[in-house]
Image 1: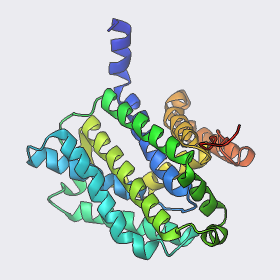
Image 2: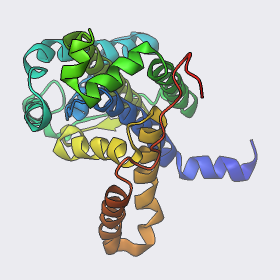
Image 3: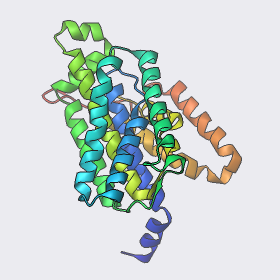
Image 4: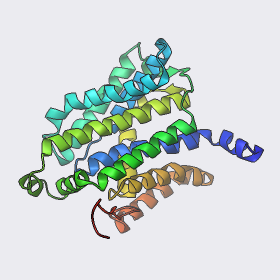
Length: 282
């Protein structure tokens, strides 16, 4: 590896890892928004996955692939447990319910000595390299693109546009909504595990309300027409603070102004186009 590239990767290793992790989080939000659900529980699912993998890594000798599997399955179990009561809600009520889930998790993590309390967990083995993070991101993006272009994608779009019409057309709304929530939880849990093993430290406040809103911003800015829209939103909002760093105290103001302008003048996101369906004519 050339010395210049090696120095670049060393200097910006945290940012490069964050781009991949935030891309996975954006995809997890895309899954629920693509079906018309406003869930803000992705930060909580991320926290569950992060702490599950970190605790397994610190206290057991499990192989890392099994730790990642646990980091996906445990949030999925949480999603199944809360899915039945919360998915009867919609709009802002579902958002409030899932925000409550995140706050309950954050309080539990702060009060629990086993999870390190308010100090969090440190010394987590750095097992997640760039290849693994971006490999997972590429696999998730490909899978969601294939789903979006399929009959399942058409059903998801129908639910997002008009639930009543979709139900009349024979779409099983509860099954699709539950599946979307579970897949979203698995992606968020995977992102949390990769982040924990890339940064070697996690804390309860990393998975609170601020994180939930940030994850939502990725998808809203990029657009939910395709997975690439959410990825674009994550890319912009992850890089923007670094690009605006010379502005120091004003960079958050400029960051917010850019998001507001984008939402006002690009209501369908940075990438509004939708992929062609399988079997459809261009």
